[in-house]
Length: 195
Image 1 (cartoon, rainbow, N blue to C red):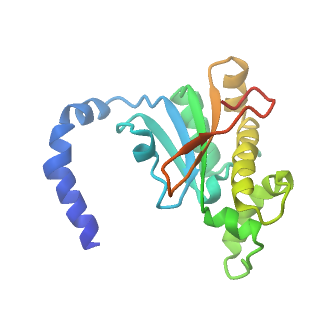
Image 2 (image 1 turned 90 degrees about the horizontal axis):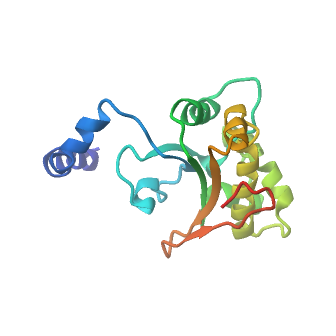
């Protein structure tokens, strides 16, 4: 906690004063242009990767950058997607997977998750990703297929489907390589939804 306290002090003394005008504007304006869905992994920092300022991205982070398909039940991920698209009118959604993803590694290598039942249940949202991956055990391929599968899941959400139909929204699939800093933009999967 001491490191966090030092970080807050540094933010207040050095960073905030340089961005005081931006934060004054953000105090009454919330107009992010992109919904960025990434993994909860601490090594993946959307604002750092994209070089964006506070207020530019509306961020959802989940284990494995998973997006459950729409269901009648509500959950935090669905509510955040709906708010970003319907209320904030984001123009783009990025689903960003990453190298060395613990969730995808566990699935690809068949790790025993019996000691983490909540994690095991959550990772069932990647069943389609596993089915789309040709070679069992190929973590890199699973990471890519998972991004594409989560984009497909996104399009099942009514707010996303409406915005796509009205050509007010574009979906993008990315994979961030932690070791090199490279971002791979996945090609269109025939749906016209991914850029």
